[in-house]
Image (cartoon, rainbow, N blue to C red; front, side, top):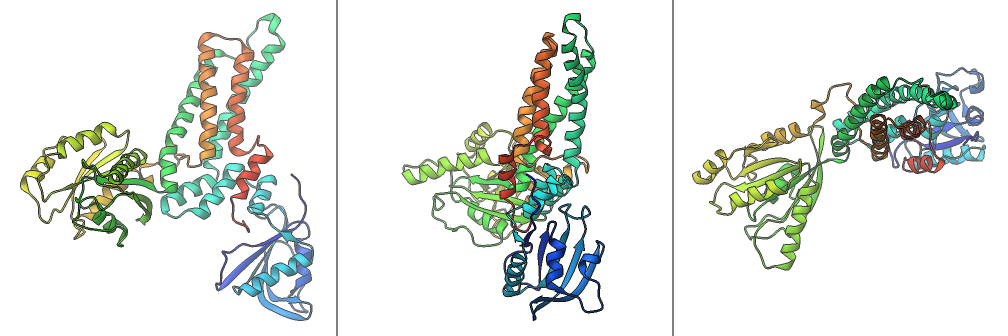
Length: 464
C-alpha cells in the first residue's frame, strides 16, 4: 500500500467561487510548489521554510503570472496526510484552477484518486479507518444531527470504545492460548468467571451499539416519515405544508394520490424523509390498489407514521383503520393527526380525544391548509427520534459497514458465552474470541483487506 508519489487535486467543490484550494501531498510537494511560486526576491524559497508558514505571492508558468495566491506549508508528519503538504489558495476561476493543476502535473505530480488524501492519512497513522469514514460523513452531513454524529466519530469516540473492547479481549485470548501449550497438565490460566463477566459486559455494549444504528441511520439519511390515512383527509396538503412548497397535487377528488410521493426537508437541524402515500379505502381500481399496497410497504419502512384523520366528517371506518394500523406497525412511532381543526365535527373530535393512546403514540390537532399547529406536530416528530435524547458521550452507529461488523462480533460473543456455560475447551473459546476480535478490528482498520479499503475510499470526493 506504500506510495511515495506526489498527488494533487482541487479540494473545493467544482464551479466558480471567490477562492479555490488546490492541494499537493507527497515527498516532492514542496519542491513542485517551489518551482511554481514566486514570493519575491527577498523571500526564502519554500524548501527552506518550516511548516505552519503562509506566503503570499505569484504562481508563474515560466514568465507568465497565472494568479496571486496564498501558499500554506505543512511539514511531515504534522499535516493532514502525515506527508509534506502544500495548499494553494487561488482565485475561483475555473481556468486558473485547471491551469494550476496542469502545471503541478507537468512538474511531476499526478492527479489524486477519490479519497486518496484521507487514505494516506489512514495509512500514515493520522487517523483510524472509522475516523476516515467519518470525514466522508462530515462532508456529506446535511443537518445538525448528522453533523454531530460524524464529528464525534471523527474525534475518535467510537473507535476508542472499540479499542477498549479489543484490549480486554486480547488479554484473555493470550491466557487461553497459553493454556493450549500446557494442555496435558490440564491447567487454566484464564479465570473463567472473570472472562464470563467481561464477555457479559462486552455483549451488553455491542448490543447497545447495534440498537443505536436504527437512530444513527435514520438521522444520517433522513428520518423516514409516512403520511397515511383514508382518501381526501388532507395528506397531500399536510406534505405541502411540511415542505413549504406545492409538491403534491391537492384535490377534492378521492384517490388523487395513487403512488408514493417522496421528499426530504431539513427542519430545525433534523432531516426528515416524507412519504405521502395513497389514500386507504376499498376500491376496485387496480392502479389505486397497487398504490395502497405501497402505502403499507412505506409504513413498514418508516420510523414515524402520521395517521391523518379528517375532523370535518364522521368516518365509520376510522376505528377499524386505527386498529389495523396498530396491528401492522412494528416499533414505529404513531402520531394520530386530526386535520381540519378549523372546521371540526364534534363527534370525530370527541372520538379521538377519548382514544386510549398506547406507548409510542401521540395525538395532535392541526389544520394543514392554514398551517395551524404545524410547529407542534414538528415538535412531536423531533421528540420521537432526536440526538437531543442522546448523552454527549453516547456512541451512535450510523455506518452500515460498522453495523455489519458489529453484528458478526455480537454473534461470536454469544458463542463465547454459550461456550463458557457449556465448559467447552479453551481452543474452541479462543477461536470464537479471535473471530470477535477480527470483526472489531476491521471497524478501526487494524485488520483490513485491500479491497475493503478500495471500496471505502472510492466513495470519497476527489481532493479529500
